[in-house]
Amino acid sequence: MSNKRVQFSHSAIPYLFIAPQMLIILIFFIWPALQAFYLSFMLEDPWGLSREFVGLRNYLYLFKSSEYLSTFLFTIFYSAMVAGLSLGLALVLAVKANAVIRFQSTYRVLLTWVYAVAPAVAGITAYFIFNRHIGVMYDLLLSMGWDFSPETNAFDATALLILVSVWKQVPVNFVFFLAGLQGISKAVREAAALDCASPSRRFWTITFPLLAPTTFFLLVINLTYAFFETFGLIDTLTRGAPGGATTTLVYKVYQDGFLGADLGLSSAQSVVLMALVLSLTFFQFRFIERKVHY
Image (cartoon, rainbow, N blue to C red; front, side, top):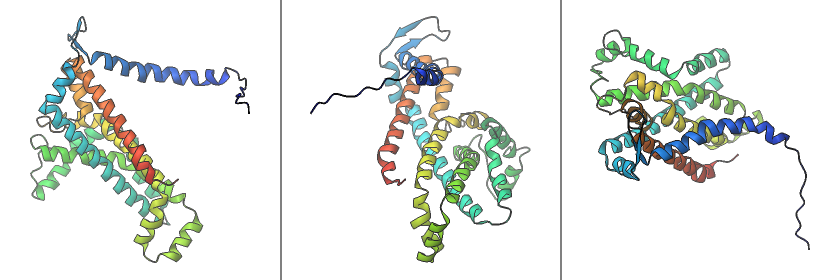
């Protein structure tokens, strides 16, 4: 039997359609990544007038730095807390809003409007709300016996940062969960009501497995948000204080690269961060996605 493959002729029009998108990816994603990889092996002066090849020295400095290790551990903890809390809270709100019959659209608007607020604006707003001189929440916490001091206490600063990050991310998770709940057919819900008398058991054995694709998608989105998109919140709320206790990997890249003018070390951190995110994404799609049924 002949193994000759059939080739169909086609025009170049499809390539012309995707060319603008590929050009944007090349300019704004591929080219900066290659530049960061190249600069991570260099020692460059703050004005960019000269550079010297130093091999793996920037990476060795990073991996021996206790400060960088603390930043790495804080980023993992902060990302896990933000993703877990925002997903859990949004799921509870979506289930409650889906069960409401009257004024359902009002509840949706009230729970989703926060998503329209920019991260930097949310950070500034939270800064004034928790300010020790004019903040209403500071007075409330003080009346409860909590001497709230995010400027000097690492626990308070971390709690404030997680609280605002979760508040900012809950609306988008809520929208996706609510859409997933409303996508479950009425026949399945009626069959579940007949089979399971307990609402909680009905949710965990039937409803939640049907939400697994949505949950998996939101898990990837939330971890990406915690790693990269919280930069504006950190810069307006704590700026890594106190003593670098609330510095994430992305914010440290900014501190060392733009404030410290150490482009080589900053580029090495960018490469490490990129490898970390790629590894995390691979782990999610390789192991967690197996438990998702579409």
